[in-house]
Image (cartoon, rainbow, N blue to C red):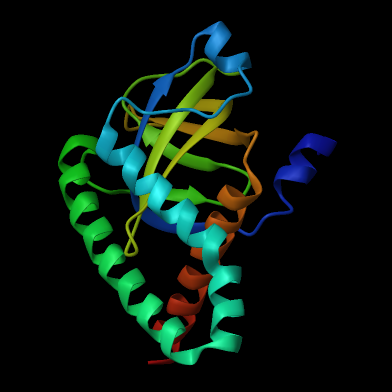
Length: 187
């Protein structure tokens, strides 16, 4: 096993059902270091809402230490914003398509697709993680594309240039999914 494969294997993988869409990136887009932006303002809004929520969590903890009433009020406001985000996500699901089963880790995502995608090509992957309706637009490189007996293609990707916030959001989603699966197994 190559060291690159070993690096990818260091992340815990889950089988999950998410909404996923991708677009190939051209040479210049693939090499650009700036953040990707989707043509859908609603998707960008959903993504930004979750990133801001993640980045502001430590501020809420500091406020909570000083003023419980203000912290509780801000938590209520945050829940209201989450509800709006879920409504936005429902309308996005119509655009992205029905959720499908994938294999997800902090290192990449593996999914089925009707057409082959060139190995070493770069993609902009748009995902909506359920049930919290977390929208992420991530840059990825195709590491394998294998035809299956049913005519579908098994596409394996590796995420590139994730921000710390994006990586943390993925990790949190994976941990929550694991906890949910453990609860289901006990019941």
